[in-house]
Image (cartoon, rainbow, N blue to C red):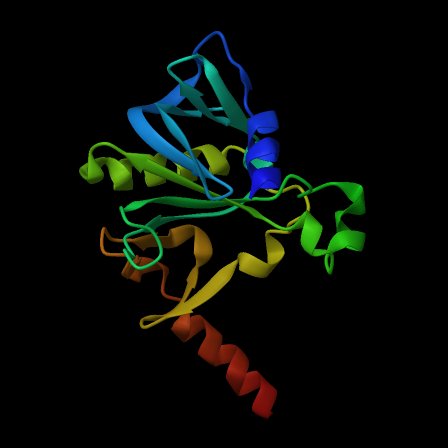
Length: 189
């Protein structure tokens, strides 16, 4: 795997100062980038980017628009410790990315962030989510996501919330099932 180590090393750069626009900072995090452990450092969730800096001031910065997915992973069969799992696509939102969809070389980079304190995983996940909300994908339309269907019927997607176990919560005041029935009747006439 010498090519991977070389490309990871070229990803690291000198970052002399900690970011100042922090939403959240998690110190003593171990990071795995492209399958290579990079060591321990501080992971910063900022208003403008994600950033990890090792104790020797070497690190990397990630633009929110290039983070295609992030999740809390507790599957010990895929990684030996609970972590934040992220997919990062350096070509995301570039004009030529549409032509590279079938090109494996433009694929996502796997990044794992392992906080020293496992009980900080959810806070770190929520902070990344908050940061991403500040940077919506300019190529996505909100029109497709206006309504979602749940156990209680249809609801505005802006009213959708999840509990700490990932279960869907819905504001019952926003249930639109009754309003939709009137339109179903119109289709029959």
